[in-house]
Image (cartoon, rainbow, N blue to C red; front, side):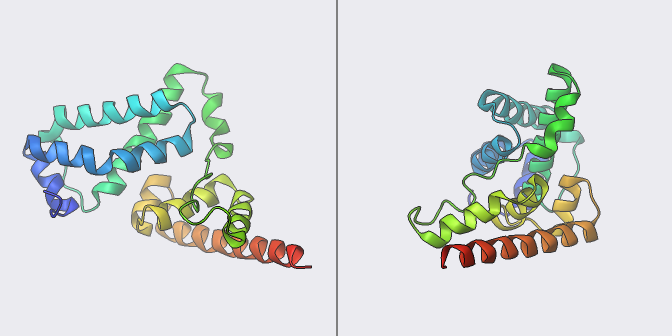
Length: 184
C-alpha cells in the first residue's frame, strides 16, 4: 500500500478501511512524533496525543472530510491536540510560553556532525526565533506547501511566505556573520 497517494489513503480511511488506517499510522507516526517533540519535550504526552488523534480518526472516519494534504492535516491536528492537552492539564500560561518552545536541535543533523559548515549552519539556525525555526522545519524538512503551513500556524498564505523569506534572510545573515568571524 506504500504506492498509494496521501489523498487516496485518506479516502480509504474515510471509508473505514482498516489496512489504510494501519498504513497511515505507519507512514506518519515518526514524522508526527518528531514534530511533537519540537513543540514539547514530554515524550509520553506526544505519544498519547498521537494515539488520541488516530483513535479519534478511526472512531469518526465517516464524518471526516476529504483532504488534499494528509500530512498537513495530521500535523495541524497533532499541534492542536498538544496545545489543547496542555491547556487542560496546566495553567494556560504554558501556552503563552509556546513562543519560546520550538526546539530544532536536529534539523540539520543528517549531515556529518564534524562538518564545520553544518555546525555553523546549526548554530545560526539556533539563533532564529522559534516561529522562524518552525516554518523552516515545516517547509524544508516536512516539505509542506505555504497553504498547509498557513493553516497549521493559523496565519494567512502571504504571511507564511513572508515569514519563510524573513527567516531565510536572517539565517543567511547570521550564518555569513559567523562564517566571517571564524575565518578571521
